[in-house]
Image (cartoon, rainbow, N blue to C red; front, side, top):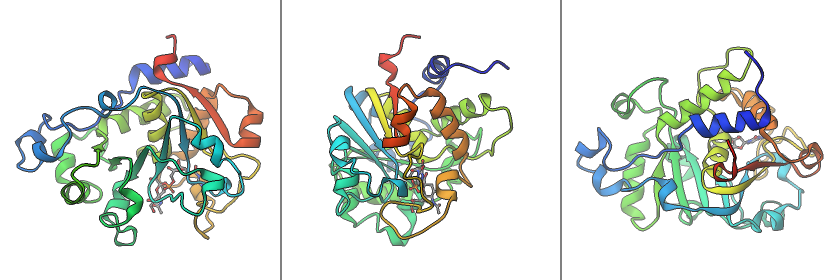
Length: 277
Ligand code: NCC
């Protein structure tokens, strides 16, 4: 199989990965008592954006002492992940949060206090759960990895005004397939990390996307998160998620310079709307 160039890879992702979210009209949700009341009527991509410039802020330890906060906040829309805070870390990660992408583990675990913590109560929430490969929505609904739908219902009832979407599992696996088809070896059959899901999500909403410390800069460290004293190289290299392959793909799609990665931990990607395929 020929190795695709950066622009070819970008176009392939644009053509083959649909950024979709669950809507109230979808089976089996349309037939459940809670879902039509609580799930959004429309797709996230028809409700949000388009934005000119967007920032995706990974949670990597290498953001510490980066001084990137002002630059990150200068974007029209900023995406953050899971329990990553801004308070106390503004100098390095900024303070604007437009969208927060959370995995179902965060929604379900007691330590994150998902239902009550103020961390989650501003901006747009987007959640996802690792669905089994090639399962349909009903199979997944009956066997989610973590209780995403129970927590979603609880949260929506407590915060009825806050926009809150759930990623369609088809998006996870279409993106996984792009990684697999562009790698020479078989990769683990687990969905991509929140980092890559969020990056592609933003490419569907923005003209240009800057991703921070997904490809580690010269500040690369075993510190897992910028906000926690916990060290594990697997946070950067991956274990459950095919993270190293995700990073390989993003490196190939990057339109910025290698120096930009090295100095600023910054990758530049075009939004789908700005691509000529
Ligand atoms: O760590 P996590 O990810 O919340 O980080 C968000 C995204 O940032 C990128 N990252 C993070 C740390 C690092 N050193 N390098 C990085 O490149 C990754 O792209 C990552 O996706 C997740 O993907 O949802 C993940 O969530 C955590 C955990 O569930 C949450 O932080 C809540 O505690 C997972 N950790 C565990 O399950 C122990 C992690 O594997 C993936």
